Image (cartoon, rainbow over the protein chains, first blue to last red):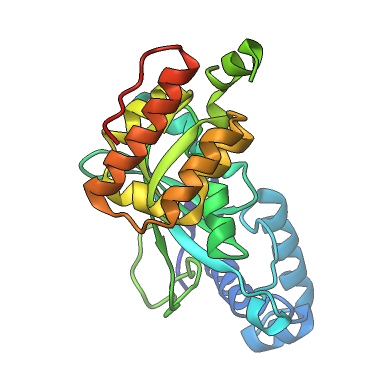
Length: 172
Length: 114
């Protein structure tokens, strides 16, 4: 049995034990599995699974459950691009917030390399729509000094942070 | 064209209606123009690849017609598309056409070099 791990959030620290971590791992693999099936597999009561999941939902450890949709299978041939936005350093935070509010922006980050940058993953129905979006909604934002965009041609991996196995030594 | 219409063409437009120079899809150079006068200056500064990109797409004529509302200049720019100009040759011709139009609108004497 592994001891509890402390997850530090903005205002409080949440303690998770090995069972919580097992449940999180299971949910990340398949969030539609029933409490009973998960409990049986993990060797715990389904009520324990349910109670712990509810608690982690309330604590904000589990933020949401989503479906990963294969856009091509339903005829949506969206293109995805990674956009690097160079800004006045004083404006970067505000520009990133404005970008984050736009539906075309899937992810947005600030990054410090040689200069302060905003990196954003964006999606559009076509190259033309992508260009329109960047020309009409991103370039005009005050503080934007230039933009570099790379259109993604092939995806090799897309995943989210995985809860490490109990055997792996990690510091949360 | 009336003096009122001329002054509308020469107005400064809000930043969301400015022309933003790109070199390719999604690659913004950092150069923009909010008026015909500014546009005239930017043509001489920007990477010629940007001029080629926008001319081929019809972006210049569209902006001039829809934002500056200058159908005459838009038609002149459209004619440049057919000449298949590139690099500094394109810059020179575009600069000439836009400068000539600007001088006419501001009642400055125009060159007859071309």
